[in-house]
Length: 162
Image (cartoon, rainbow, N blue to C red; front, side, top):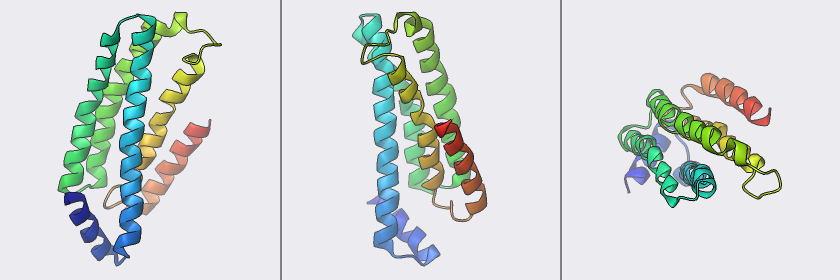
């Protein structure tokens, strides 16, 4: 309901058809949540499996501050400048610690032929630039900063492909 209200206001300001815009924005925001949850579970699976302790799935809790902040910002305004704070939370509170844990505990035990081998770790970490793209392009004022968003999106896409 709140998201619906926000989208109607955005569409009114930009003079766009609410149904079309809201579908794309909702799809992008849903993809952001699904990818973030998928990445959290995938990256927590490695220490849980290789250390034989399911308590490592608790690492998914590290995602909650960034996700909570994102939801609060969307509820308030959804401005691009505040969404960069979400990216900072995500990078320093989630990505750096989980990557460090995976490299420190699991890296030597990974076998190339296993399903949860090094390629799946790399693919799980490669979801991060996609999350950044979704974060940038789902801001309520991303059209005001079209040049900046396009440039950042281009650079992140190159990093993702590279």
